Image (cartoon, rainbow, N blue to C red; front, side):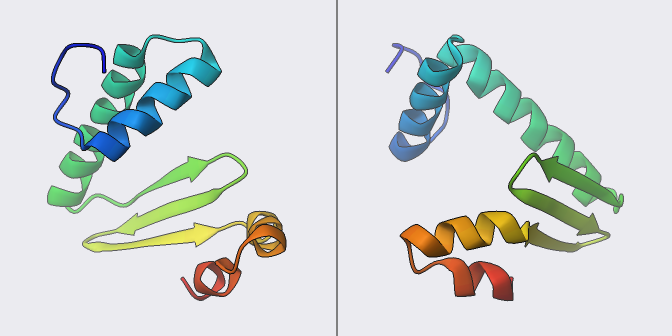
Length: 93
């Protein structure tokens, strides 16, 4: 996939490749953005920062000190419930 090592798992590589295709962007750009976001998250968590990552139409990753929790939007959970049995698990998180 792309001929270069990204340090990602094969599954993550496939996800990045699919996202790149859907967004009409180079896979390297997608990988770079993900890695940059993870570095910011790693820095913030290691220094005890409070922050939120908002994922449009999905939910919010809430980070307070060393506590991290994902809060999914109810509309997404209901949509997932119509096609899969994951809704209860998402609601409990």
